[in-house]
Image 1: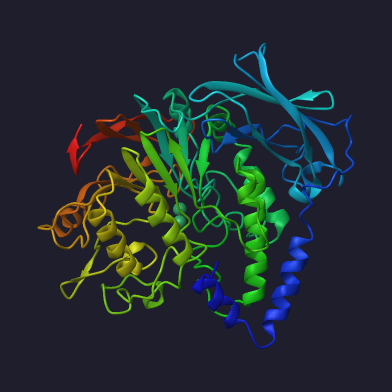
Image 2: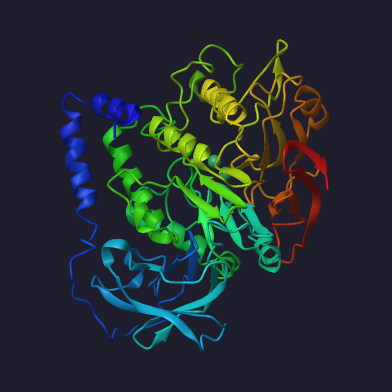
Amino acid sequence: MFDPIRFRSAVQYEGGISRRLFLAYAGSLSSLPLLTRKASADTTPTFSSDPFTLGVASGDPDHRSVVLWTRLAPHPLQPGGGMPPSNVEVQWEVGTDEALRTVVASGKALATPQLGHSVHVEAEGLQPDRWYWYRFRAGETESPIGRTRTSPAPDVMPARLRCAVTSCQNYEQGLFTAYEQMARDDVDLVFHLGDYIYEYEAGRNGSVRTHHGPEAVTLDDYRSRLSQYRADPLLQGMHAVCPWVVTWDDHEFDNNYANDISEESGIDAVDFLVRRANAYQAYYEMMPLRRSSLPFGDQLRLYRRAPFGRLADFLVLDTRQYRTDQPNGDRRSPLNAAALHKSNSILGRRQRNWLCQKLITSDAKWNVLAQQVMMGMVQRESIDGEGNYSMDQWPGYAAERMQLMRFLAERRISNPVVLTGDIHSNWVNELRVDDRRADEPIVATEFVATSLSSGGNGPKKPTGLDAILAANPCVKFHNGERGYIRCTLTPQTWTADYMVVDDVLRPGGTTSKRAAFVVESGDPSVKLA
Ligand code: FE
Ligand code: CA
């Protein structure tokens, strides 16, 4: 299909560079195995130490199947994870009890060095709307047992869904304490909305803990960074509790990037896309993603639909890979002609068409955009009486944003809700076509999850809170603490509990509910729960 943004990118490099790009892609592609070919594998591998140091994970469930994930890595920070450069056979099994006495599905998978000895099994033939347990085996070694679940059948209206929304977990700036409480919350699903890792070099961000290695550039750099994060017992433990639906933001690759454009000037376009291919491949390897997200050179399809019966349709977006460059040099700016320009797109035409089509055909009670950057047009400091807006967030793409809001309103999309990360603070926003016009009808509700650890401990009352609330009638809540959002959806209500941690700088922090909000079906306005 024709995608104007990619087409423009390709054209942009014509005149000598496109051939280099092609060769660079060919180089990165040749590292991917041919998945359909029968490959030889070591069926009785032995390991000097436990190969399951990164635990297990599951994700992207539907009503019949779920992705089961592990990665063999006896020494996860080393290149190759401490594995020999050969294929290894891994067995998997799924059972209906936590001791796996009753196995209902099992099989073999191949862990290949080309994909970092990661294993992505799409376990099929499962029953809808039920919990399962699973485990992997390689040679004589067994993985920990993970718990996962399928979603309800498409024609069923479930009574309830509980999910957690999290983002932004800088390893150097804080501990992942909040995952302890999340594991106790008994959620059906976790949505991770990006900044799962930070790409920066050791010591750049903080001193609570230290990144391993330089700023991530090579495939081994990104693998080792993702491994360092996943080796955290609390993060790893949460992955073993329930399925996750993940999407990335910028730091999985490079701060504030826009498609193939770096925030820094003077970056070679070919080097940048080869680096992106490394980041995307390592991300695929480490996440419980389906084969439909297998990377293809510098491209990886991450936008997708995750339905939960007729209760909710989650439309998971990728607002990084296809966006046009941030206007106004990516500096906070008024909503000027550059910010409002019609050619700015944060979605890209193909993803936008997909999104609109999924929204039109949805019969779900709640239609949820699970995505990265804030959609509320929130003005921060005022200069000469004119508000300034983030150009890296939806206000930098204001025309497309207003078009989307108009679409939601005119097509009477049922209960649109936006879930957001990125900004390292909590927000609840009432979204209108133009959020500066408080007299217009509310179209959707936005719940912005704070960071899990990025930024270290933050204030309950951010500086300038009163001015922000006064200047932005769309903002119903704003808070600067660390944590996540715990959501409970029923056919009648959406309840969002804002969970915050009192201290992420030292072990032993406690997590509690700071505030709770409720939206009733048919009315996108926000009330205190
Ligand atoms: Fe972040
Ligand atoms: Ca971000």
